[in-house]
Image 1 (cartoon, rainbow, N blue to C red):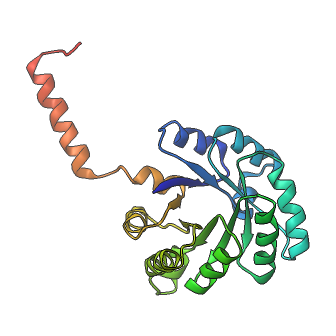
Image 2 (image 1 turned 90 degrees about the vertical axis):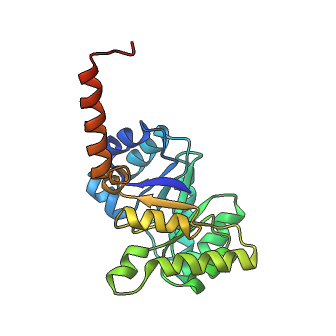
Length: 217
């Protein structure tokens, strides 16, 4: 499963990319607003940081305008993925952009039927929001499994991008259920490695090695 980082903060991205484990980036209007930077400027800067996909979202809710915005976004860099809402207009725009060879990420998915329609529209990625479903008392991970089963049964190549990740448990569950990608907030990305027993064990090893007075170098 690929790892995307869900942020528009280039400082956070620089640290994450330094691990060599990050495959791409997702952004949205809220993250762009939080960055305080010009939309096209920050998108271009992020695209220069990675050869992987970078999702940039349209602002319009009307199909024809989404297509125009999507083409402008795609011209920023070759690795831009145009992010579209899962509405009828969004699906129309998805079809038009996909026919132009532009990669798309259809976002705000909450049902298998929505995921099916997005795949039929030619979406490169579908973004089910697992955390928001959990917030309502539903099981967001069940949606990941249902979409995986549907796509496998129907032969769709649209990649499942688990979004609205709340913690490390969502990441491992998404991988076990067959998600192709998890897009992860920087805070959760760093939490993936953390475990108190790892820290405790390493401290003991370092202390014991120091007691030997030896050096490998």
